[in-house]
Length: 246
Ligand code: NDP
Image 1 (cartoon, protein in one colour):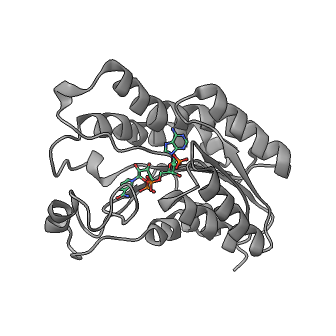
Image 2 (cartoon, protein in one colour):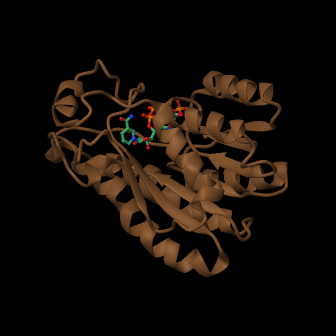
C-alpha cells in the first residue's frame, strides 16, 4: 500500500466529507498530506491526527477558497513544509441551491470563486512546485451534465467551469508530464448531501444502483488517478455517481 510513497499531496476542503476521505486514502498509499479548511479547525485537526497515526506527515491550513491569495499561500506553504508537491486535489465546495432569480451577485461571485477561480489559482501555484508525474485532480459534479432537480443554476455554472478547464489544462501541461483530470461525484453521503436529506429521494430515483455512494468511493477514484495507474489518463472525466446520469 505504498504507491504514493515519497509523494506530497494537497487537498482543499480536507476537513470533512469527501476531502477528508481523499486525504486519508492518499496517506494510506504513502503520501504526506496537507489539507485546507475554512472554519472546521477541530475536524481538520482530527484528520491530521489520523494521517499522522499512519506514520505520514500531515498539515492543516486555514485557507478560504473564496480568497485567491489564501489559496496560493496554502499551496506554497504545503510545498515549503514538505519540500515538494506532487498531487493537487481541488475539492473544497459549497452547495448553493435555490431559484436562480434569487441569487445575489455576491452569492454568484462566491460560488464562482470557490469552485472555479480557486481551482485555477491553485493549479497555477502548484505547477511552480510540480515536476514530471504531477497530478491535478478537481472534484466536479455529475449534476453539471444532468440537472436532475431545480435550483442548480449557480452550482452548475460554477462546477461546469471545471469540465472545460480540465481539458484545456491537460493539453497545456501534458508536455511537462503533469496529468489533469476531473472526478464527478454523484449522490455521496456527506454533510453536504446526506443520504437521508431533502434532496435524497429525487437523486435515488435516477440512481441505477439505488443507493448513495460513500466518500470512500470518491477517494478510491482520486487515489487511482493520483497513483501510477493514472499515468496515461489526462483530460478525462470520471463520473462516480452510481449510474445517476446513465
Ligand atoms: P462537505 O460539505 O461535507 O465538506 C466540504 C469541505 O469543503 C469541508 O472540508 C469544508 O471545510 C470545505 N470548504 C467549504 N467551503 C470552503 C471554503 N470557502 N474554503 C475552504 N474550504 C471550504 O461536502 P462534500 O464532502 O460532500 O463535498 C466535497 C466536494 O464534492 C465539493 O466540491 C462538492 O461540490 C462535491 N460534490 C459532492 C457531492 C455529494 O453528493 N456530497 C456530489 C457532487 C459533488 P469547512 O468545514 O472548514 O468549511
